Length: 77
Length: 139
Picture 1 (cartoon, each protein chain N blue to C red):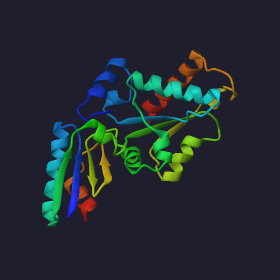
Picture 2 (cartoon, chains in turn cyan, green):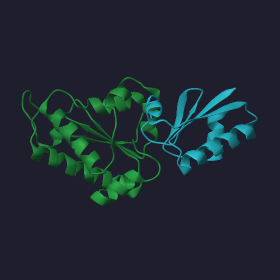
Picture 3 (cartoon, rainbow over the protein chains, first blue to last red):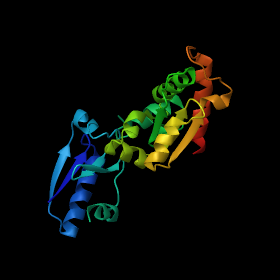
Picture 4 (spheres, each protein chain N blue to C red):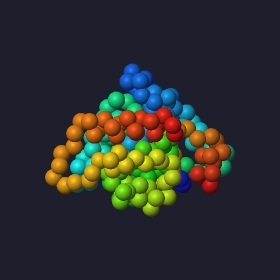
């Protein structure tokens, strides 16, 4: 089970990133848990200063952008 | 913190700067060492940040290998490094981490002599700010 964490305060790009990450995980057939972290203080604990960001199993993979579906798949596989 | 909804860009546009105003994610770093040139680097980075040219970020965090901070720097559109002197500690932090999307500015390249126990001047800080703005615009 992969833990997908969306770091962002809830703006449209954060939602877009969450949807893309979920879609990528489903297409790969990967079991996942999606967690949205919206508290800025919690986000900053990850060392992230620009949102949205995606962390996979606790490791920050993408910061400040919404990657393509293929890019997210590469991160998850 | 820069959000993804363009607040920084709007602030930058108001200042006429070329970093966040263009929608780019520009991160600023100062060596912030002990000499006068390091104080200049720190003051210049803050001036750039408060005028909307980018977001100042934590060089110490990169040096410490904080994973999320390293990824933040890697994914930035541009990292502006302001080193005080030719030792180039800030740049070496980036090189050691394998992060290449940066432009380096060195305060001593402006003819400012490195010294201990000497305070920076507003004019020196302004010189560095101008150089950094040019670097941001060119990158």
